[in-house]
Image (tube, helix red, strand yellow):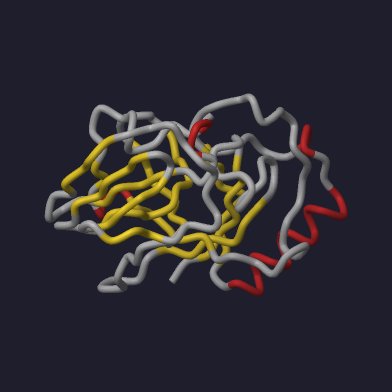
Length: 187
């Protein structure tokens, strides 16, 4: 398993993930299942960059969105992390795809608006490992919540273990500024 830091570049995953912050990301292990609610890093062919989104629809499911509420095969999905949305629609996820949404629903470019709304497993390159509040995060927000889009993900360097990735993050926090740090991937 490979580990790296992912920098979130937009408000589409707010308040779960904050723009400008770094999050520990692990590559997907062969055969490891993708679960609903996972925060994934996607190499989006459509957008031409990496983005971070939440997995909502699994292969073969019917997803309904009405009045800000999401249902899976007719059963309401509890989403305390998501903001309300005015979007309405129904999606039938194909056997080889996943439906991904941002948590800040009305400020997110995601499966609801993409030309190819279903993301194949091959484009999912990693899973965000949620740190405890206030830990393993760096940077500050550079834009306001009115900025819409995908939570663009940038790589902050590869690491082979969570400990090594955290160590790299702490060294960066002590010595670097945002301006001197390498540009995120896909910008």
